[in-house]
Image (tube, rainbow, N blue to C red; front, side):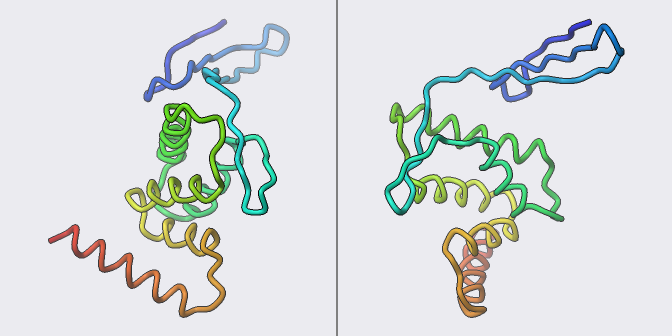
Length: 144
């Protein structure tokens, strides 16, 4: 048995299948792979873009927050689409981090601060305070 349909954001095909031997059901997602993307790290070494690593990082930042796995998936899809649409096959880790922070800023302010604390390598409590203050002022300005 097989049931196929596009995901809500149209970036993948969702296939629901059933094992003919044991009857277990499972879901697979098939994505269009545009090109290999390489991430240039701060020390200049290169590694392949790993979507699951980005999902894991965003999920950690969103842990115990009112952010669903679908919202995380949409954020990562959006980032990946922007990278692929740029036409470039390489992206710096710095730019990837900035894109992730931009997405998290609109998704959840606490997750945004959590991600930023690792990304910006906060070393003391004052770093958190200063950053949280800047986030708070932006949020208040948007509400007005």
